[in-house]
Image 1: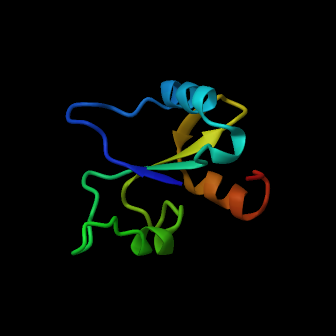
Image 2: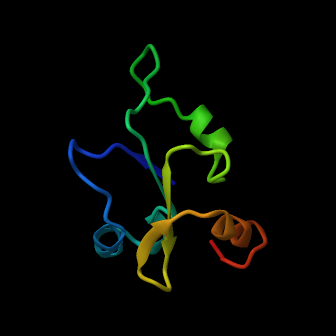
Length: 95
């Protein structure tokens, strides 16, 4: 999973992000999930806070931020839904 913050007045485009990731990253390095945060939280020593992100995982019922899933069949990042989450948990989608 990648957790990103978008530039001011920018929108996430799942199709162009997929093309960019597919072109520049090997298959094993492509983020399967992208989480969009309005602000990235830092620790007192200016490191990124990751513990809470790891604990929340990719369950759309828990994550309140926008969350996208890499759909290789559609060749784009799609909005994460409870159905996709259940398919991943039940091994219908292979990661």
